[in-house]
View (spheres, rainbow, N blue to C red):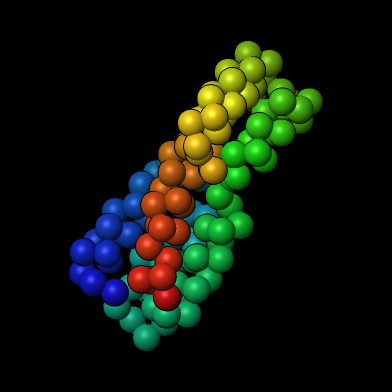
Length: 118
């Protein structure tokens, strides 16, 4: 991995940790990865970090289904769920494969570098 890739992934990892939409599991994996960079455990922790990101990133169809469900209304409230649903349909029509919230955007940016990280 190049220094440029490492710096990019570190920056996106910090953004992921700061994202309000980041899950507790992704945040913990991100913090663990940052702590492991440059150590003997880096490769092992990187694999676990990538696996967590792959599990947490929200496919756009999943977001559409959730935002349009009673559970989504329960989490977001009716108005916000309606707005999220409309936004998700709009970005899907534009070609998005994943949610574009701050956490998912950071996940996608990191996962785009997966081959270089592993």
